[in-house]
Amino acid sequence: MSRLCKQLGFALFVACGATAARADLSSEELAKLAQNPVANLISVPFQDNVNLNDGPLKKTQNILNIQPVIPFELNKDWNLITRTIVPVISQPPLLPGEDRTNGIGATQLSAFLSPANAEGIIWGIGPIAQIPTTSDSALGSYRWGLGPTFVLLKMEKGSPWVYGFLVNNVWSVGSGAGGSYNNFLLQPFLNYNFEGGTYLTTAPILTANWKADSGNQWTVPIGGGIGHIFHLGKLPVNAQISAYYNAVKPDFGPNWQIRAQVQLMFPK
Image (tube, rainbow, N blue to C red; front, side, top):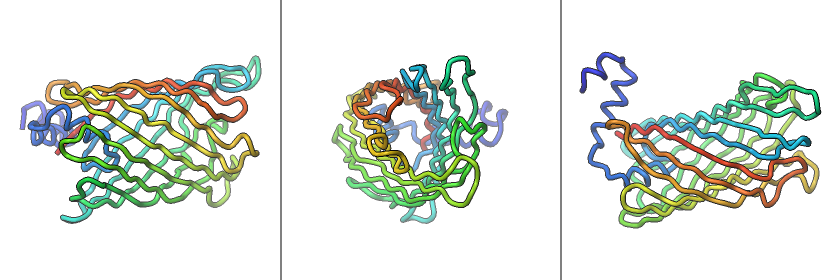
């Protein structure tokens, strides 16, 4: 344990100790670890999504998702992987003369029960809750939400491929401003890893708003990008950039998304 870890407190002590304990991992192994949504890995991704030509005025919407992942070892056979998404939103105006709205959207918290020693086929299942942390009605609903979530992927030692999907559906519960909602999400992902920690990726986020009118329910993006593992001292960082075209979208939905992500990784 370094003197820096001692000086900066317990949280950094945990992070520094975890990084040092897995210093033997190659960049390619770290990349594959980052691509596993239910890896036994503490990480903090910052994912910025720039949505182009959004709304009737065709302005730019920006959503920065802060997505800490914290695993818990329940016993030698099972892990509980918690994934939180806190969106920081800059929403363009709907009408000329209106101001842009900036603030926090609804937080989503997922908890995946996953086998600790799975190989080849890896899965996780559990609940997802939507927490009404919304700071302004223009940024989302004030109602709580609840639903199921599931992830399945294939990742084999010696293979450069990591692929699978994540799916969930969230229904509003109770009462509150913002109205009821019923939202579906499917994220297939496909990654090809090169030696040295560089990889190609596609991970479009398909969504459906079941409350919307027919023809305005689905958003279906197509695209992909590139990522790379680098280090800040001993700290592994997963960085990637990608672009997606919305082949299917609601009226006034954005037609392009530019996604950039920096993920701080604290392997055990």
